Image (cartoon, rainbow, N blue to C red; front, side, top):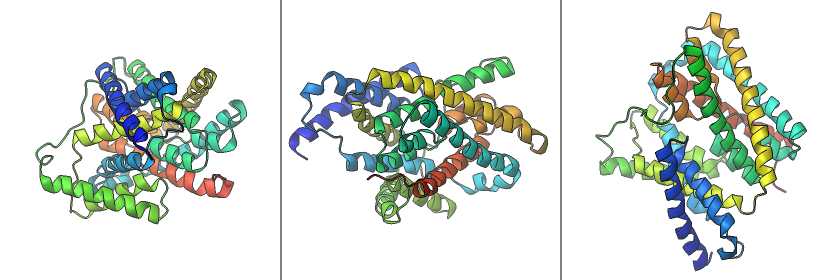
Length: 356
């Protein structure tokens, strides 16, 4: 990679940070990643002639910061969360059916109606695991621009539609990603030992994950190492806010570079297909909620959030606004994401979805 590539990357990152700051200010979901993605995508589209020939965002740089996102997810895995699992067996079983049925329905929408190629339709239809599906889709040779757009539209539509539906359901406004903060532990964030442990987990995960051929190994490796540290009592791990913000900016900027020269018709089609996909998943989730309602102690409004195929953080924020235990919601969404990633791994091998 020549010096022009590094200079271009250094130019795009502040643009991504500005986009993230604006998205955070106006209360968009996943603001630092989505804002960075949108601003960088706009920048590379408008300034295409000024970019070095064959420019690509440095993949190893992006993967290093994706490791911190894996650590953030892994830090949510603890014994308190796992010990709740037996009480939620009916809903977790229902989530298993939800993942299979939702993925099949989405594949039909994107493949038969949207006329995407088989590989792109398969990964676009994943009802969870945004970063994992994009990473594995890239390895499988998907149209990464279409895949990225569809996966982000899934998150956006869920976060828009679920609070609206819940507000109608309970008769009063429901909080969104803005204005409500998850509880944070701040006393240990500044300790050098915590920073060192986070960095060690990132490096170990980045090395071992790909060696073990884990799906999206640069993300899943750090995730699993962090979960083990938490469960064995060595942790807990606290990821400072600024590290997560920087990681989202870098990952968003890397994805934004994929939009170079994307056609408007692709975007318009993605919006229509994404809306159809999300509405079908929410309808399926609602149906499964009422099927298991007589055999579970979880309130119906919490169940609805558990089945919503959105981001873990955003769905937990909605749970907090309903005075519900966010750990219950988090466990269901982590299970959905893990099950989705396992399904992607097994099915892509069976279907032969690899880059040729």
